Length: 239
Image (cartoon, rainbow, N blue to C red; front, side, top):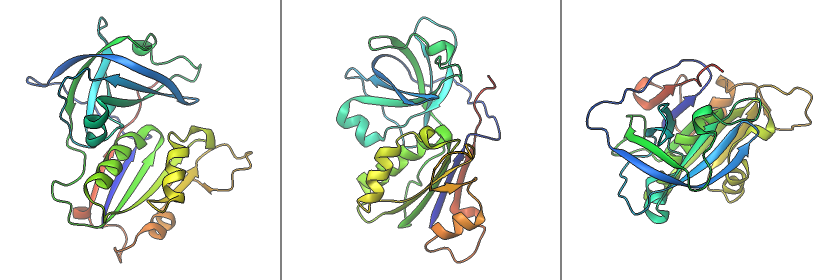
């Protein structure tokens, strides 16, 4: 059993761009509203080879701009090879405007992409059959990439996902995840951390020990041993 945790509420990290990191200029193929506070941006690789591992991130910004911010790749390597695209899940401001450096990102807009980079991801040799992913907010992006890649490469894999958001409408990929759960392809638990007045019938509160225990399949003790836990703590830049 391996657990992967990505939460965007607590600790801020900065990903450094170092010499030798690939740089691309890619056009936006599609930009759609994923939730009230996020936008899904699909980039066209335009035939350029882009090799990355599930869970990795890129720096992205307008090609003619100076601002670059890190975003995890939301699509899997297998999907990128098949479609020739990359997907980024981008948080937008509460006043409904996108991040300032991507406010003009519409189909055809050129973005500069630095990367891929980062070591958060699936083990090179995935010996375990049971994977538990735990995400908060836009932290679902790299875990989605890993889930899809695990599915593409290991037909026998058993995937569980705990995902939290402020309110029901803020679950990115909610319909897609629900469809996977209905088909029996993943075990899914959704929980909201705010919005007490809603008629939501799912879970409430953050992922606590009781919820995690209910999703563990092969680990007999809690907490999960550190050598079987892969985690990364991030936060969005303060607005």
